[in-house]
Image (cartoon, rainbow, N blue to C red; front, top):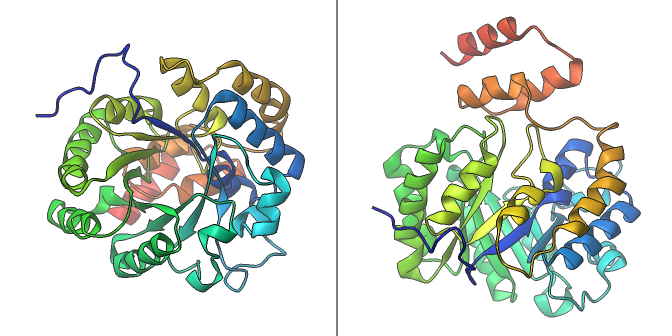
Length: 324
């Protein structure tokens, strides 16, 4: 049985608020954020005391088209430095490497980069390639995480083997990733216990990346945090793929650590997110609830939202027939 890490009023030094707005939000608009938007977001993260900002993905331009996707899908060093300069702040900069889309030879040594951390995103069947990336990035001097996706589709023994393998690598943080937004707090509690049982003895931390299909991203993040997870992923106003993520303003409003400031977040929402909501569609809606309940990838729900499909009974019946 897990014990709570302190009380609701505790200030825990191990807690890190990890912003994914540009990276996860980029999945909504193919990373076509203006420099002004990204710069303002960076300055907000600094002012709000956020610990990490994930500025995008390390996709190789040989894999995906630079004509179709904005620069934050590729995170070239010159583009990052155009926003953050030398980043002489307490905010750490992160990027995400997708297995199969990132070419490790294109990633510079940490000494030649303003990036502090690279997060490796992988499916279970790609784990050997993910470990190869993790070890390469570690050797280059970066902090590393591993986000194992779609774990709601895995069997216990399979996930145990994955965690055992990762615990033997040089990865710093192992992430609980609720890719389909289908987990409930009770399940997150059990996953937190499982992940910590492998991570803690190996001297590693655990993180949580929640999606909001069932409007439980905030609750699941708190559940994981209360029972020992240290790295907490958020996006401003939940901006992210499909139903989005745990909202930064909710989590920062909850945490009692005075280093986190609420008003810079509200100012950014007022000036940048409110106008963006008129252009882009994200956040919980009935199609996402359906895919969340069915523990399926939100791709069909995203299509339904894009096309304005509100035939929810037909949508549900079609999915249950396809996945039965």
